[in-house]
Structure formats: C-alpha cells, structure tokens
Length: 419
Image (cartoon, rainbow, N blue to C red; front, side, top):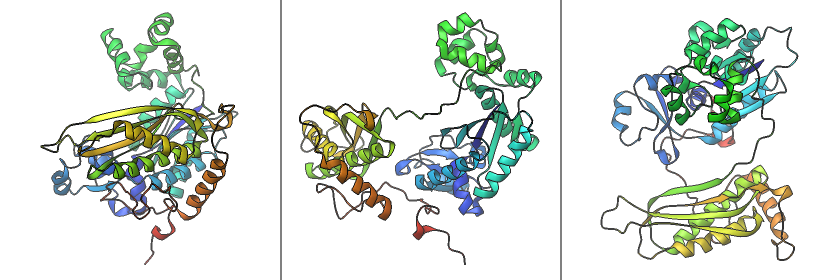
C-alpha cells in the first residue's frame, strides 16, 4: 500500500501555528518581493481571491475583507516541512519527499495492520507535534493514493482527513469522480486530446487500449494507466535528482545605471547560486547573466539582454563564478540605461564528486578549502557574515517583505516570547 500525506494550505498553516489568532480567518502568502498571491487559506479561496493575484491590485480588497497578508517566510516553511517529514519517517523507512508539503509512503509487510487507523494516528501525531493539519490518502498505487488524498481533503468532515481506496468498488467510484484534468501526470495538451475523444474522467482513461496510450502518451502514460488500474507501476524515487538549473534574480527597489552597482549585484547573485550548489553537492559548467530595464519608466530606453558563458571546468566556487558572471555583465552592459532587474542562472549541473576536471590549468586548489570555511562560518554565525571584495560589505540587499513574520524555529532571536 502507498500513502500520500499532504499538508493542508501549508504556508498559511505554518503562519497560523505561531499566530493562532488567524485560525478560521482568510490568510494569503505573497511571492518574493511581495508581488502576487502564491498560497491561500480555505477562507481566502472562499472570498474568490485567485492564485497569482497581484498584491497591489488587491490591497484595498484585502483591507476591506480583513485578509491577513504574509510575505514568504521560506526559512520557517522549510524547517516546518523537515519536522513533518521526520515524523512520517517513523512510520515506514520507505518515504519519498515529493515536495515541501507532500510525501509518498510505501508500507511493505504491513498486511496485518489496519492502515486506515495508522493514517488517523499519523494525522493526529503530526497535528499535535507540529500544529500542521494534514490529509492522508491510501491505495495500492501512487496515482490512486493521490486521488484518495483529494477525496480526504475535499470531504474532510466525512473522512476526518483520511481516505483509503482498498476495494475495487472504491477504486471505480473514485476514478469516475476524478475529472481527466485532475489526474496526476495528465498535462494540458493530453487533457485536450483526451477530452476531444470523449474521455472526461480517470475511469474512461483506464479503458483505453494500452497500444494507443503508449503511442500517444509514451511509456509514462502507460505506467500511469496501470497505476490507476491498481497495478503499482510508478515506484518511489529513492534518489533525489540534481536540480537542472539554479537561479538568483531580483528586481531592484529603484533603478540602477552605474556599472559598479550592477557588478556588485551580479557578483552577489553568482555567490548565492554557488552556495546553493554546494549545499546539494553539485557544480556547473555554464552560467547565464541577464539585464532588464524598467518597462514602466517613461522617457527611458527599453533594453533587455543576456549572455551565456561556458566555463572551462565544472565549479561551485563563488570566486570563480563571480569572476565569469562579471565578464558576462561587461558584454551586455550599456551606459545610460535604467536597469530594474538582473539575475544569474547556472546550468549544466553535474555531481561535484564525479565532475570531469581538466588535465592542465584547472581551478585553484585553495578554492575548495576557502569555500568550505565560508560555508561553515555562515552556518554557525548566519548568512552574509563574509563576502567577496566586490560585494557591498556595508549593506545586505533584501527583497521587499513588508509582511514578513518571524523565523520562529530557526533564529534564536525570533522565537516566541511567553508573557
């Protein structure tokens, strides 16, 4: 049996754990720089606030409807996610963390257990230990567990947050209830093609011939069909693949025109990307630098450009990446342009342990020791304690986060104060 455990309205729930006065009231979470809505509580959804709603357009609506607005607090969300996942790992060693708020569990050798009762116990323990509400869906395959989870969440009062598809009647009923667009793994193009054929729900999809599914949806579509038929075909991913790309991009508070200011920003972005790579044990073989002017500033020249640089060897050194990022900036920088946004994207990621190094003229051997020391200092004393010389030593550039809550679980100076 498989189980999918999904945290309900995760970002909003994390905020409510430490500010319970917002329980039962509309809550929205904004994206980086407080741009748009990326998460909503059920109460906010009921008000008709759409996903991706621009914050500046809905400011008066939020005020009129007493909607609580939070800026994204990723240190808090990441730590709360880790706490939830550590609890789930107590129930079975076979756990696949699917996203920050979802995990698949596989129960092998639990034939004599009442798994639905285990689901209720799991849900109760996560709620008691972390304050996060979760829904649990169980079935004989991952795709069916995903549907079971939707049912558990949709009919929370009746299911009490746990639903188990353990009979053929339940499976058929659940598949007929699930529209084809809501099936895990069915994208927009496949949905359009299937609906044009009269396939509108998951049950009808499982009745299609195997040959047709394999031809038009590849072997992945065939595995999905088998999974929905109750034949486990999509297994747990035990090894997390490297990210295909890492980026650090920012819009500036105002506009920048001087090369020195942009050089500082690009160097900082490259260093941030390098730090992210070192955390996941990877190196890159190429990077992209881009610049954009302010399209809304009247009387200024519109300009956008980017530059891709292929590195002579795979690296995750902040020093090396900063050097090449600034070289890319020199190629695309133009005078008298009012720049509003810039960024660095790194590509061609490979595992650092198995990267191919050149025979001659490779990276300075001291870089590895310097980067290790830098990471240890930041881990112990906090970020931005040490910087490269071409970064601003006096100012820490931050995103616009006017509604940021405290990092209750990761910063000792921001923990809850008991009065």
